[in-house]
Length: 322
Ligand code: CP
Ligand code: NVA
Image 1 (cartoon, rainbow, N blue to C red):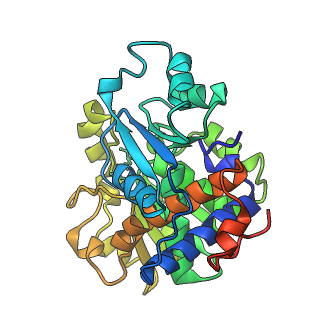
Image 2 (cartoon, rainbow, N blue to C red):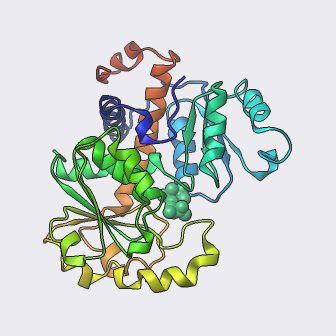
């Protein structure tokens, strides 16, 4: 059974296939074509943390494909009323996929290990692969061929940064993390990327000029992620020199694009001037969350034989070879 707990769970070719299906599905929707490829399929959405984009884009995406989503918040008692393995064995009889946003990455791994329903990571403390899919889709839409281009992530070496670093490694982009050294991605995570992708070009630095001058895309995220609220004051102090403002952007070349996974703390990690600038793609990026996740659900449905490639080709969509 296939799951998506991390982008490292798919091959480079599979990642390309998911992106190509996503792009074609987006194109169809722009013509108001909404094929019911996942008719009567059900997505369970198990969330332990707040969400706007992930929750609503999955819900809207599967609805557009003819299926439905059910939101499972704290009232279902996951991790509290019964063993997680019992919980997922029951849920798998009602739903076709589950997307889970969990405080701890291990909780999502535990669900996938039961291997009774495809599990999608909707964000954990470790990574956010669905975000990275939409990020790649957005970057491809403006840069075309992304090989040898550079993404500079400014801020915390967090869940979003780690998934973006994996995404870059998988498509041949350079990844730079710019921020205070004490908040770099841990070596253990960089090693996890280098193991399958030894040629990946990843560097972490506190040198603004070095990280910014060759950036094609600059990306930032909040300094304090969900669950880290107690550290907020220390984090504001550490990250303030790395606020993404007009001065920092002046260290990048003209036309460099700006991304943010949102939600943004305007005036903290990013200024209004930057997030609202003509080079900012953040709202297109947020929109792409839905298209990328539709592509992912369709790809998972193909992997599990829930639909056949002919279903897609019959509607004029090319299904990339595995
Ligand atoms: N970017 C993102 O995952 O947003 P939500 O937390 O609103 O889902
Ligand atoms: N790093 C942020 C991302 C939110 C989408 C968090 O985990 O809260």
